[in-house]
Image (cartoon, rainbow, N blue to C red; front, side, top):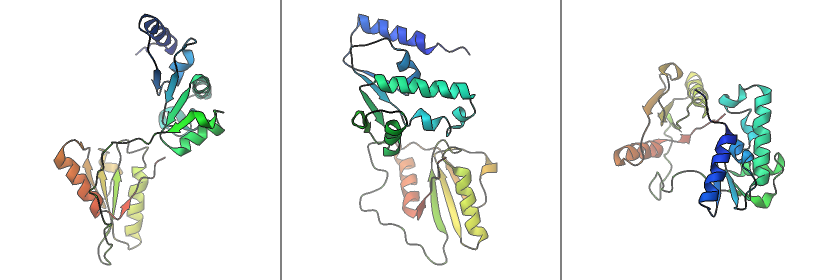
Length: 217
């Protein structure tokens, strides 16, 4: 499949803004596109979850790229970041990376935590007590199970049981191959928090759990 180049898309955006001016232009995970934009008078906002300096060696879809492609990603983001009036990320870790590795002024980077705007659990939730003869309950919630570390989570639970510590892992949000799981794991698959019954199932599992495990790569 041939994709339209960022330069062509940038030109299209520029022409559209000439016909219908806007007050603000926000680039969502679009560093290559923003790097190609011609000079603009409107403020630019770059929105991403992490600096390319870090992501190119962490995410499998990027870490397998040729060195020159990784370098191009990093350089594009540096250009986009320098042109942006505001950079929004999801964590203090990512914000610091833009300051230390990309060279952006700290006052230009802001943290906006990602996630839904409603709680999963009821107010006043008390942690479950670990009973001496009952298993330790762990919960894993994640869609991108490989990158979020499900194999490591399963390994942890299996290791606990091998050492004589009863432990069980409940998995929500994904549908991994059976070969990834073990007899100490129950996988409930994807869920939709907009559906009351499914949201309730997840909440009850969180209440039962003693540990929320998410060893993201």
